[in-house]
Length: 275
Image (cartoon, rainbow, N blue to C red; front, side, top):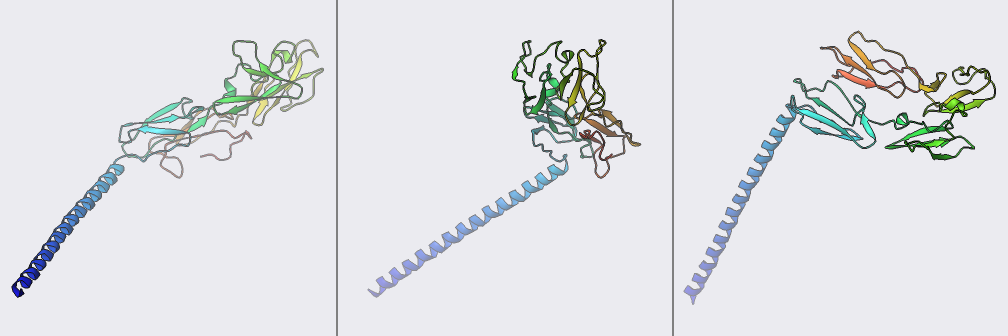
């Protein structure tokens, strides 16, 4: 009985010893796996860090997405959402390549398309156009109803189109035509167009903020040309258009590393700052 008890006791102690050994082996196995995982993560982070350092920084746009390669010489394309276009090209997409210094030389963004500027009838003689994302809305003067044009454009217009209304003029998408029984002294810019037959078909344009009457229609104000000793300006300096400064080789936009930057004339018709 005593031997049996000792043998049983010894058997228990051996079983316990094997359990500890198995647990030890399991712990060592887990430790090796943990070390392998940590090493892999460190190596992956190092590769990602090196990859980022060898490429241009990623770009983002609120109304579009950048796609393609940011590696040196690779094509990186901005694709704008519906109703938006690239400011630099007036198209739905724009492609540029990462330079060897890995710093973007220019900056482009998606801007809302001016649907009003594309209208044939400009909301009619008695309507102002409001630009919307992917569309437009015509706001009629009191007493005039909104209806479809009778031509192939099928656009919304306010008032009737024809010779009898403001000599057939509409004053553009950003103006309302005002028929006059006689010539007025001033209105908006002080210019009033009058037909050869005095007092007949005389009209004037009431223009939206940022536009002026040129005698026929409402046109955007012009902030005027800009000059830079270390670059050239190109594009249009009118309200609603884009004016781009491109620096000469070795020169950069003040305060950064860009070599090209686009801006737009404010509705006041005067530049706020010159970069």
